[in-house]
Length: 174
Image 1 (cartoon, one colour):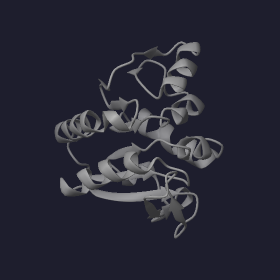
Image 2 (image 1 turned 45 degrees about the vertical axis):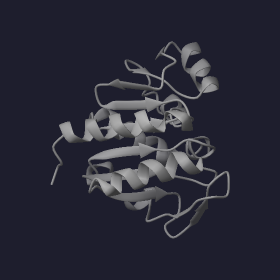
Image 3 (image 1 turned 30 degrees about the horizontal axis):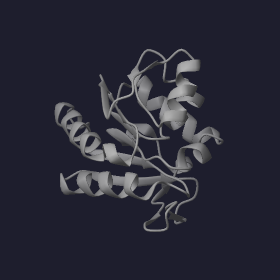
Image 4 (image 1 turned 180 degrees about the horizontal axis):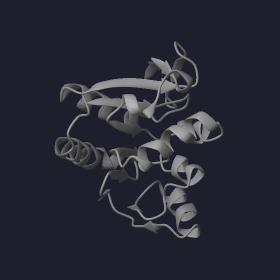
């Protein structure tokens, strides 16, 4: 499958690297999508770096089968821009798989895509989502139709397992 990874500076190192590696190992093609192609991005802890393959302006959600959103400061930075918000919204509208961990669901708040889904997130984001009327639970992983969410780095094994399971159920649009 072709998977877009929405990423900006300050991503949580392990929440990017571990799922990225697991998705690659499972044979999926991952494109890092950011604000500027070729931009070098740094993880919040300084352990990981990534390079933006394509800018949001250069791609369409139709080019991808699924979306992966790591946590950290990256989602908050992305949600301040229209292109990433529209990109995320399109995946929900087309009911494509979306995997988001920790602060990733901040993009759902701005895109208005949290409605009608059961999900989890980092504890402070859970509070924001609850105030907006979202169906939020505090557990290591939540799978709701096309959406897989987790709270924090400690949840990565469950997040990766359930994300890969979801991708197995969805035919690639090739």
